[in-house]
Length: 184
View 1: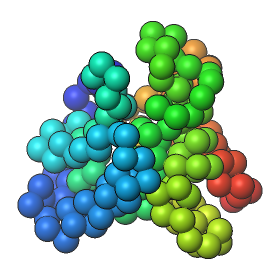
View 2: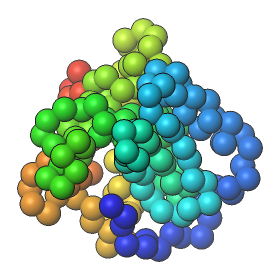
View 3: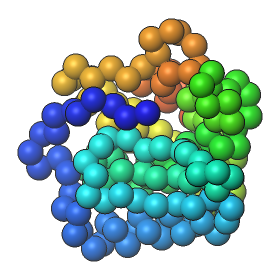
């Protein structure tokens, strides 16, 4: 569930007290709370993990994004929205499912669902604007994951299947496919 600690370059994380950024993230999280009121959304600002999680406590669904991920300077508000949608997609994305947590949609399908349904449901608006927003988020995530690879972090598919994260490039293509965009 959690990645090994990743070395974070000095200056790459925003301050946990950056009010402007926290206000933007809180507004984004509130869009998801409104769209999916049955899920409890949270940000663990002081946890420096570069990850998020979808989890359940009995029947209550939860989504938590961690401060290391959301405070990273390569993650903009569009990527934050796509990441909230990705974690929500673990709850609603359908098959294929994780082999251990049978309720949970696998990584690739959660990415597809995030771009196809999650962001659209949370934000609405015109289709062109939503596509631009998703494209910006997908580009930010691609840049972020390529940056991590420079430090030897490879969170991509070990098995070649959907259970693990795809390579940054394939993950980007999955987001674009979910948004009905052609890879560029």
